[in-house]
Image (cartoon, rainbow, N blue to C red):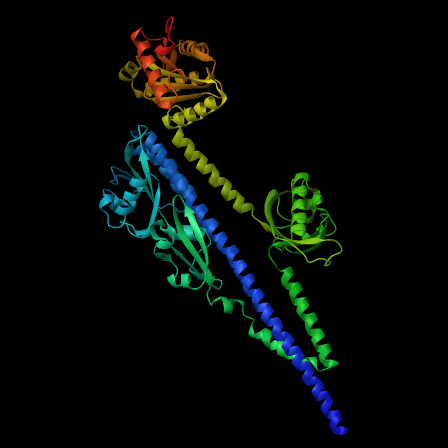
Length: 603
């Protein structure tokens, strides 16, 4: 009996130990499989974020370069002094651009900034061993291309954004080449180094060749490590991005040795009673307090919000420069913090996350100016923008269905994006408008004509085109100088804008020629009425540099579809009619012959 008394507890303890050990082993295997799936999901999201930011940086820079080439193609005779301000604005609008070069006939003649880039002047790009092939690809495709990274003549290496320049008649003028700091582009996308935070990252696709191109960032072996692959697309080119755990998937998702030791300790203590259970209970309470302290120290703000929009719990958000005191929101409703439209949108996101059992992401503003609650609890002032990531919580965790709401302050990111948008709009405006008069230039006129013709064909109405040529304007430039001539052109542009509707377009076609596009017109009667108003507007003398000038104007008129169905055909018809007006005595209008029955000229 004494022997049995000693054996039974030992046997029972062994059985308990084995059962706990087997349960922990099964749990570890399940946890490792889940951890690997979770790790792949997280890396999938991170790789998608890297790709999105890379595509945004690349396509934004391509858009800026294309806008510059449109400006040069629309104004080929202006010279570098006119191009330089636009190039300067581009360099300052993008932190990636190293310099801007223009290469008429594929020979670099101008660059900005000039300092440090003198060695590139005179370079015949087609003969360059690294850059020649990409220029041929650009010429063959007629579209922008991105090459590199390549070594620069003036030192260093960069991505080369190369875009063709075409004149209004469709002829090839040359190219704009813009070296872009590849490290800056990668850093803006969050890729400061090939290895960080336990990840190995590589990019291949040198010269935009995608998976067929050489690796130019990170180690090529990453592509053999079962990575997450993402194609980064820009124009007709691409790179391939690979992201994988630096130590491999198994090590990345493996259960830490400390966890296994803890499992062994739990198995050993499973057979014990009393004091051991008490010690474990104390340990659990201590770990719980540590977790609470860690959660409270999270820099971003977090909440538990139920399906009625009520704040149940809050944590994190200790940075008062970015977040308000979340503890003061417990028991409050979303509408106490947000305006009506935003709170309805936010509540819809919470309910969608709960019902669909998935992550929901949304961006929203907090306007503190008129919110007494936010002003009282302290935090950032003015309108603040946040991104919310909303996760459904397990059922029955709270009294009502609830979600975890993690808020990130993105105000600064929104400000930078808005400024970038403004810069891009300013560059597009410069590329599409005449620098002297502020009127539309020929490139913008052609774009508006095509839009007007498409709408006219769809809605079955007419479009009018008036081609204007000033009479005897050259004499002003010759006798009184270009300063007086420029002032006269600016006054004429101002008067022409007064005779048309907001839906019409007034453009400077070049020199002393102007064009009025009537997007919708009531036949010849409507077009000639505008011509009469134009002649009347230019009747009064124009004051410039203390002198008074009187000018006449010869106007040619054409209509869609009577005289043509394309921008080119309408311009030719209006131009011919304008010369007819000049031949008949100037300072009058003439309608294209097809509609001139009964007399084509008028005053």
